[in-house]
Image (cartoon, rainbow, N blue to C red; front, side):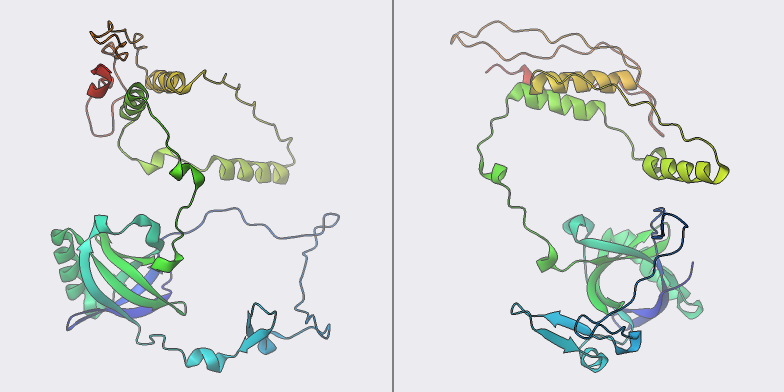
Length: 312
């Protein structure tokens, strides 16, 4: 990896020199625009819309368009006068509980490596932060943009997570939020049962980018001059009659994928003294062996929620 920034963590009177590295990378397949007939690269010229002349990069400035259509031209000198921190410091503002920071604020992740003379204070702050169970809220200027960020520990290394500002988070405003939607107890119990049936330990290595792998295979086939075969399409499933049926079918499909036996249909309770029919309660699932979880023992089939046993 190549460092993209050098600076220092400023923690009280302690300064820890660090190097910053991008912690993630996109693995998308990149393409160039080419001429279909001969494969020649397509080039674009920077042409002024006023005089039609090609403009050298040195003469290009940034322009801000007003609602009236007029343009405010900003030069390098204008940007140089802005109050952007040039001290190359990661200023620790406070320490907060990690669960207090909504993940929607996170933008990009970076690794921090200590310089040789900063190794001991780096390790000291790292160990103290891990023991506290908190993350550091910091302010940093990267790529000509000042950001809030959090500093946490992952695999023995500080991870700097840059954050969006509060006014950059959109407020969800959807019509259904104002609707009064009734959810039956039996539906909620079945949905909870589905969640419990599908629970497990998170292992990111179990997942892959199937689209990227298929695209790479197409490219390799083109290179080798072979025919490209189209995979068979999966058969479409018949739509469920109602929400409860869909949930029940999902539970059974989840159990089937884990090698469990099919659970018996839930029974019905007699009507209560008030004349109302009791809600259907799920019978206990037949004991079946689920696939062993990573680092865990055998799991039994999920039991229905206790709320589904109550009468209406």
